[in-house]
Amino acid sequence: MFGRRGSNDRVKPAFPKAVPDAVDPVAVSPLPSASAGIAAAPPVRETASPSVAPARSSHTRSDSYYDTKSQVFAALIDTIDLSQLARLETEAAREEIRDIVNDIIAIKNLAMSISEQEELLEDICNDVLGYGPLEPLLARDDIADIMVNGSRNVYIEVEGRVEQTNIRFRDNQQLLNICQRIVSQVGRRVDESSPICDARLPDGSRVNVIAPPLAIDGTALTIRKFRKDKLTLDQLVRFGAISQEGAEILKIIGRVRCNVVISGGTGSGKTTLLNCLTNYVDRDERIITCEDSAELQLQQPHVVRLETRPPNLEGEGEVTMRDLVKNCLRMRPERIIVGEVRGPEVFDLLQAMNTGHDGSMGTIHSNSPRECLNRMESMIAMGGYSLPQRTVREIIVGSVDVIIQAARLRDGSRRITHITEVIGMEGDVIITQDLVTYNIKGEDAAGKLIGEHVSTGIGRPHFWERARYYGEEQRLANALEAMEKRSD
Image (cartoon, rainbow, N blue to C red; front, side, top):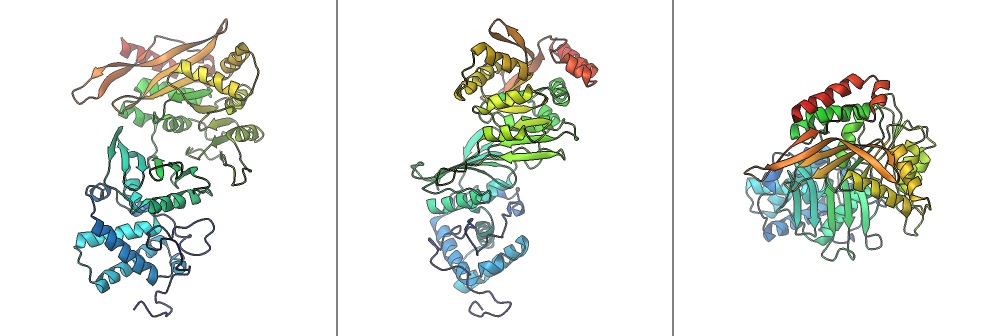
């Protein structure tokens, strides 16, 4: 049946057989320069069942399984016309592949159980249309991070704990091909000439790839996953990340257009918290976001999303975060949201906050509110500005209203540890005051830390007049009073 070429028959692939590593399940992945093949077939991560995924990664597959898979895949490539496959809908393409693979297994008389055959069918469909061995991990919503250290070592973070999986790739070439498939979707590339790349998945999950020769033991792939159901402040309350009264204060801060900097270490939940705060922005405001890789998913209708661009092979065409922040000032924004501030663009963001763009937000890597202020000073100095220290601090004080500190604790839990106001200067020192702090009291038998969010007793915050302007002063007073009563 595989030799005929009728209108309904499957024919040879449209691209030459000289494709490198032709039996590699991902060697036929769509690249920006491909004019044929399966470039039009989108990833189909949603078809993998989250409930099945853990079971699929719970056992180690033998080398014979991978040998069988390579044989079947090679026969599949010799059978189908990938250009015709690309014209099919995703589900139809999966069914077509499954039918052909079943025929190949029967013709080759391969001895496989029903469960092994079903596993092989799913794997090959994932290799052709999705992200190969990563598919079962991407389908699970309980995984926060996927860390691939070469073809044989895949780790995941679940509930704050890092654990190794039994997922593996056939070799480093297959892993690199999957990375190329991911980054090509956003117009990026990763190879020996450009071995470092930041990209994103269609759902907004952040991807970083570093390939040989920089990665000595094989390509390293890191995926920071985002939940399919976006978190809200009310859900953070249920998780214990903030108290109910603290969440109410944060809602008011977002509503009354305070300029906010979210501070925290890597993996502390800064971007998640920024997404939560933007839920309380009025829907009629014009918001412009600037990010290295687009992760923020705002629900408001009037949002313009900007993304940086790395230089090309000739070292030209780079668009930096600072370029984006400068440009968005000319786009009549009402709020500017910077996904992550890590360089001289902090000066432009502070200038925007101080010149009528109230309610602007950004995130910074730092371990405390005080350290966050110091980092802003340092980043301004990195930009080559020769301003006196006092002038820099006056700009910060005049721009930033609130610093929200997030932290990932040693038990893996994430907590908002400080809600801190920037209130002014005494001499050359920036004065801050904490409204809410998180106190750790101990840990339970399972090693989970026990703590609570407490009020510092501030009855009238520095942004009280702003809250009154927006008619939120009574709500703010009630939240502060309720938190103080609980602390007592």
